[in-house]
Image (cartoon, rainbow, N blue to C red; front, side, top):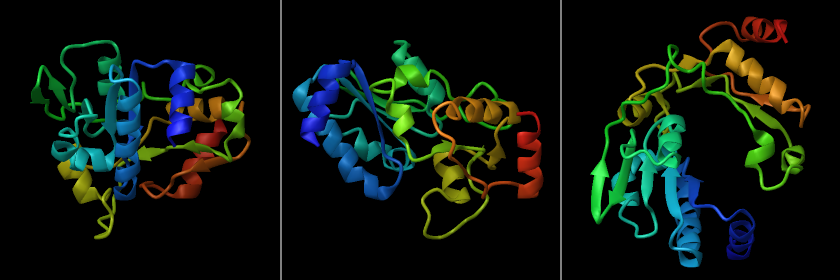
Length: 212
């Protein structure tokens, strides 16, 4: 792990590194990755995000090698952080030795998700041929979950408590189509999530593909 991280840091020379801490089993590896990065270059800012990072943000931010924990939906907060904005929504972070907590006031829903879609894949991968190596391209059709499975850290009740998301929603149809068109340039095998669909799954995908 350390060898690979050193290679990537030398090649990309980032000033900010975002680390996904989606599910509980990811916590140890995410923290170890952050620790290694800070040991190599303490000037790099470490940003954690994801379901587990959101739920345990008060614990995660106290690690000396974590600078920011983004809670809930992260697209806008990460953008503002990268642009150097002084106030970062949905965030617990350190500034001059103090821990600052901002409320989760950026929540995606049906009314404000159309501007969120994949882009610039040629620029965000380590090399231009990396996108072609993926086994499949994942297309997210929704956010949140309508189910309340007692074993799941991403169920509807947790989404309400941790993400401030009252109900799951389907993404804007045109944004989903843009994702399909982009990923199809690199991979012909697409994977979709469909457990959040409020309408008939077959009808949804017929409508989705009709204008492609």
